Image (cartoon, rainbow, N blue to C red; front, side):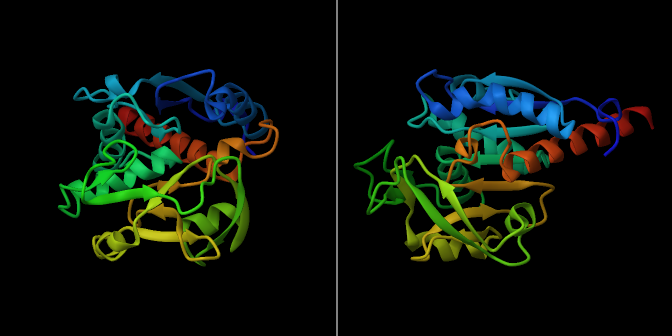
Length: 247
């Protein structure tokens, strides 16, 4: 692998309402250190509260956006703005747990035209729920994920079957899957019952979301392949930006 100094430092927006009580948030500093030390992937990470992410241009100039767990977010609008900005601007994006759910919410509303769909955690009284309570909560659970061959997820994970950790109680309503697929979203991972666990957007430089939480893998000293892949995509984005600046 080339020396670390040959890699540019990538600016990454960590979108979420940072809290010491959220285990995924507490893992971030050690994961960033491990990425730098083990993989020579140096990320300059900035926490962006969801209220701040609402503002126009709040995520401009970043080399990656990671919408972290921790829902209900203080601002649904800010949580939805994160994947929208990344999708529209070609910025590498990762959404995990609540980030997965709000990425789907943004795609359904802004790409599919389903402007009336909601998240049951935010609007339990709404009639059109895209994100619904799981039949069985996955808080504190591990589960098998079957990954589609040839997908971005399969290339990252290096396997068509994996066991991942969860900390969530909401998932995707099957009623909307076909319209999401028809507009270009790929559901590339599912559990043994066929319930969606991974989504990605083909044609985008890097756009991936998982209902499971890769930040909870292991003891936090070895970044999960999904996190490493986001870091690699961010560094590549930074390198291209640097090349354009010097062209």
